[in-house]
Length: 638
Image (cartoon, rainbow, N blue to C red; front, side, top):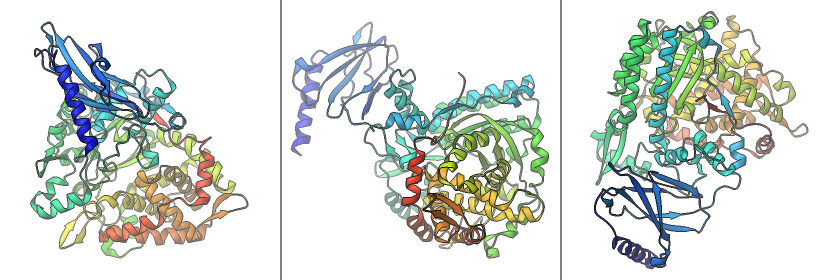
């Protein structure tokens, strides 16, 4: 208390002194600070201001002589490295031809230590230009014009995503766009790849400042805990649907929690995006694309995506685009909120015949699941399952946030699944880049040579495709506490890892069915090898990723079952194919049962028991640190 009182007196003294010469002409700005090893000051723009003046003094305040006044010109931000233990008070004024404004709010600028390995960490995230595709040359001029509009829209979705995950981090990231020193460039790379001040590869450990990442990002109050939210919902059950709606922001209003629709909270980004979609629709000469773009534009402005999702499934064009709030991975508070992203896709029409053979397999694969019929509702024969191979030439927001997807299955709305189906998109340029830049080099360090020799493009492609197909297999409803819920609602924050595990293991389980029906020619063990390499990549992500969580659990379960084998002599991992096949079946039953029952206790037990990295694997992963990138970061020509 004495320290707080002392600081309060010092702030008052500083304010009284600087106020003695203040003018009350223009409006004062609002000053914002992000503290840490790299501090960032920014202030709001004042209408009519011709410039800004920054005043700062050491903390603790030592008297008038210590105040430094800096003319910032028209600049509205300042950033730089500040060593641990160095601290200042700071205020800012606006000015116009009548004089200076009153002073802004006082902020404390406090330096801190930054990770000593941040330059090395950034170096493990090589940039790859992913904007080029030979498919672009085949587009008509109107199609290229539509693509241009979608690329512009992607930038707005990127900005909206920043607001959802780390609005202060975005300001720091933008301030470092012209970074010149090695440290500045490393901080910029880390911010750019992670979309924030927290390292997704280190369980969201902070690399700028000491603030911990809010589990739900900034779509909730930063200080809101799961227990507080649960207690509030229990006391206010009529507000539950709004609070857990995928498309609302939760804010505090006194003692209450209130919701704001996404299209209102993020109107500055949503409205320009919608306008670009309307403009693209006017350029389109493809009726299905025109319809989808118009409906998606309307959906962005209303947060009602059902009709747009249906139109997206019907889309038949050389261009495809997935845009808006879709995936929930960033919500580690409740696992309910969707986050903005974009994928601008050029469809490889020559692959249609290759993919067509899988389109009608849904009902048979559902029936093939080794679980009680109550967990595998009838998969209607007329359910659509569009399959695309495309090059992703511009992604943004959640779709670009460091752990680069090579495929996706959308929409996530069970009502759309029931009415029409879901689309599986395989992104060929990302599949190739991931396999060559990360998977194969990583496998060379950790897996037995006999396993690395099995890593095959076609087998890897098929397993990833089956992963996406399996997202729409298994249970769709959970009856829990007298309520009928979706698995996502029932499992909450456990849903993402359990669902990704179901897709992973279900994909492996269904490969023998495809082989037996002549749909796949590559041997079963080649698909297992691709899964092993993919698992190693994800395990490196740590427990900050649902993929890291569930793939580390699966790896350890397979080890305990003898399906994976560590050879201490060769210091490599190998597999026992028959035991692997049995272990895949057993784990799939476990995961589907957890999801079908909405069993959060079983989910927590599985994750708490198995989601870790054991010493033998940890040593090999450490050995790969110096030679194998963690991930590549997509960049684009300006």
